[in-house]
Length: 466
Image 1 (cartoon, one colour):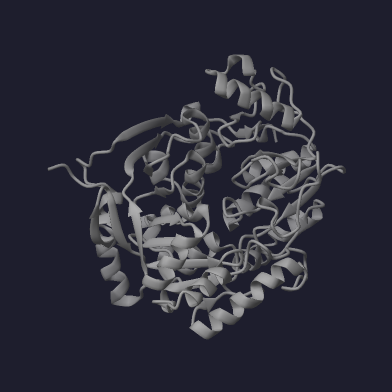
Image 2 (cartoon, helix red, strand yellow):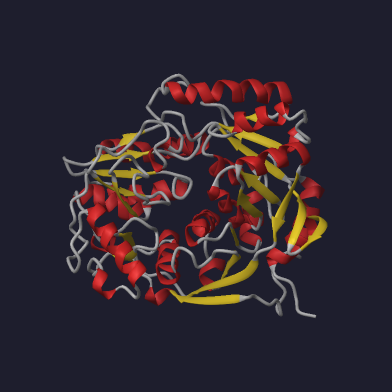
């Protein structure tokens, strides 16, 4: 009998009932709520006559629809305030822990989960947000759910799911200068396509993953959904255990030792079988920048804008043509040197302390271009405070950047913070869809270092030249 993958071990341990036809009823260990859907889901549970089954396993934070303006309050963005008020009320009534604005622990839901020790190896974690796969960087089985699924989890602490197939991606080698985890995962999506992971749980492995700090692993898993996969996982190891030790909600003392002993059993068996395997040699990976309107529209920054005539089929030829028209780019021209108007450093993909440090190193001793508006939005209150304690905020403000309050901000633009129509943004977020950062906004995804380089140069720039 073949060995088990990391995914198989977690799935099996959480299967309450095999429902047949590839479906199972799973126990869910953590339910995370945010302001866009949290209050409405809790209200629907009540309207249907149910109770929240385990409020002690449910955690909430406002992130999507809150202003990040310095000195903000919950009322700064009125539509967001109308979402937050009922979330506050219901969380208090039901005994759900809410990390509110300005409080220690507040932040983007996918930043605070790992940061607080809510996300742990081997757990099942759900949230009404597609980037819940981020938490898989700690070895959890984490995925986004729809509104009706969220209500089901709140009422029963279980969820019916179809078992996905298993994919493994091995990143091997040492990253070249200027290459970050963001570049690695963008390169993979460009190589395989935005639908390659559909129907799969993806496990990332290889020497480059084993040598990667935790925050980089979270970035890798965050973009799993942009490859079509609901779930992305990385096997826990000593790097993870050291990261978790001492965090607020992590086990302590003998319980922590027992947990680590269990976590050591989670990595895939040597003879585990995957349905699909891919290999990425880091010698082939350079700093990346997207050129179109899908994360798969990505190239190395020193490459020319692709020509739709070279697309492999009619469907992609049409998509490339439409993407170039929207982005205002010409095929065959260098993408490096394309003028930018905005730079956004933030989001659940790249707003952790290491991300801000990496961007600050590029900015240090320099100033943003006069025509560029540049924002830095820390992912959590703790990230913000730690960065300020190190003086990272002063590096940015001294270079003309705006240092803002924690939140999703311009990633999804559901809080009124948008890139103006027709203007071009280099963003460390996860999606460059049409209108994602505002109506007719043009978005290029990149790493924090690449975004910082664009702000300094006033154009898409190769960070290796700085």
